[in-house]
Amino acid sequence: MTNDETNEPLPLDDQLCYAIYSAGMAIQRVYKPLLDDLGLTYPQYLVLNVLWRQDELTVGGIAERLALESSTLTPLLKRLEAAGFLRRTRNPLNERQVVVALTDQGRALRSRAGCLADALLAASGQSATRLNDLNREVRDLRDAIYAGIGDWGGAA
Image 1 (cartoon, rainbow, N blue to C red):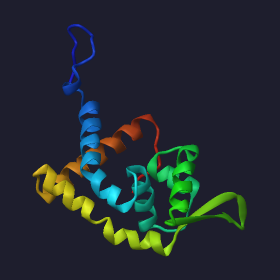
Image 2 (image 1 turned 60 degrees about the horizontal axis):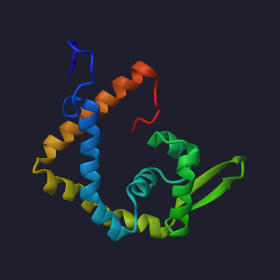
Image 3 (image 1 turned 60 degrees about the vertical axis):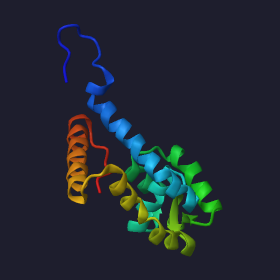
């Protein structure tokens, strides 16, 4: 992974960051037709996935979990609210906080989104065990990097 002789950037295929980035893009291509059927974009799916595990989070809590800025998240939340999947309300104890909660329609979508993992398994030709191991390795790498540069705070 080094190119000491010339001090030039490595070819893309030799860079771990590109391998992870392009794998992420490939995964999103697998997910796209399924997400289209659900009426979701990938970032919207990520927001709902967070809420399916812990409903009624603040905008800041969701942003922290997804490593996004609140200003990036707000348009996603507005679109999800307009689609009827969630509602946003002010925290009565702290008017500066907006609490995001799933609607019945948003909760119902959870059972329909389970097909994403199956599609990735089929498209990759890998076993579930191998993909789980790879996921753990990438998370461990992410966590080690954040430990070295300053914690992101979004650990599961």
